[in-house]
Length: 600
Image 1: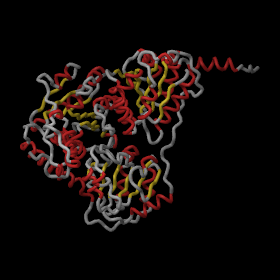
Image 2: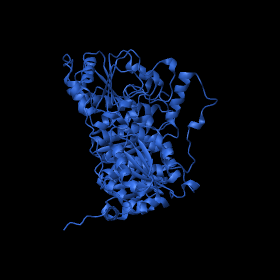
Image 3: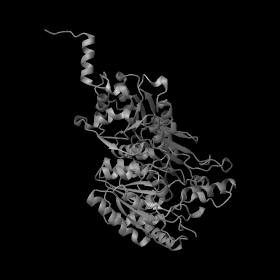
């Protein structure tokens, strides 16, 4: 005999099956493949953190000493795994502390789910301690932000948050949850299931045909590969399209957060210059520019309308992106295709005729690149001898790291980079095997790389994780070394200590050139002469991490070898502090291709 259950009986069984609001959260995270929760303890979040002690949840808690570290670590984890990075924050101060890396996650299109403990819902009207409109604080830098209004909303809100974070283009989402909902019974008939939007949609056939027609046979073509290419893992597809063009020049977008193209391909010219005049020079005279997955279309600090738009208006533009916002965002396009990059590129390529036979074979790419690196290494050695302060050029670190890499001491290298003024050197000298083997926080908010290295090391223990970071950025969050020591994370931290904000010094020169404005004095506030007792190796030792100093370029390779052997052999982190020069190259010598890197 079948007994019909009343709605009330079904409701009670649903509550029992789902458990508390906290349990619903973990059901969704577990089903999404999440196995790490990053955060800083707060009273409101204790029920959520406590959930990581429930073995059946299969999720570990990663304690951090600052909310921006937790969010940065979640970024690194998400980028390398492809799964959502999840972080818990503590009310208003927690959100405020994490805004910098929330901004970086948004600009870098990283799927991060932020769970923020709000104060008791019955108290919010009375403006209790630490409470505020958390959604309003976070929403500018998220794809979706929401405050849960009851325990029964937790399940649907988690489903939507995970769906939105992973849908193309990916990005961070934010959920504010009054803490009492996490310890109350919660209905959830969704059973932890998350809708996945299939990303591989192909662009409109008519627009694909138009793009192929514009690209075919155009003289001096330029391709800009943005983070959309890296996210789609579309190196091979871009290369196949480039084969149909005559002598194409391929550039990455400025401050790329992925490695967006194979650096061994001689057609790749590095990142677009982050200076107005130099960027215009790249495009001037081009018969066409193909902007493929191009997000950071104005990634510079100084701009003067009188000097012209970044891409001259007479250059025909073709766009391809899975994000409609990026199509024609700043510049008119002759063709604009909304479609998945990896799926759509072959459709364009198939419609393009083969170009005339090339003068030489691309089989010599490796030899050409090797000659370029050797020539450049000689230039760097000369620069070291000419340095006005007797310190090491930052590029020398990249040269030495490539030598170590060639000896097999850095297998599966993943470089987390925040040595911004030397980014081009690390991109050009090192060998990268996948788009995710290189990471930068594209937003440019300082203090992302050391936290991201934590999440990267947790995401894949088989990678060799190297974090290169300037002294200014390293001073933001040395507390990262506490987490690295506590969790036995294998990371080689290389601190480039030039005792200056070198990037800002270069930026000031651009202001002077563009606007004719000069500072009152020598701008000593852009220098960071440390007090006698500021020592990064000693600072790291206070957190349990060992390391060493390097003050001579000839000792770099040996030091990096010792560091990598320590990291890979002991599964422990290591810090190398390198005394680098603050000498600024001339405006004419600020790309990797120029012979001179330092003019004293």
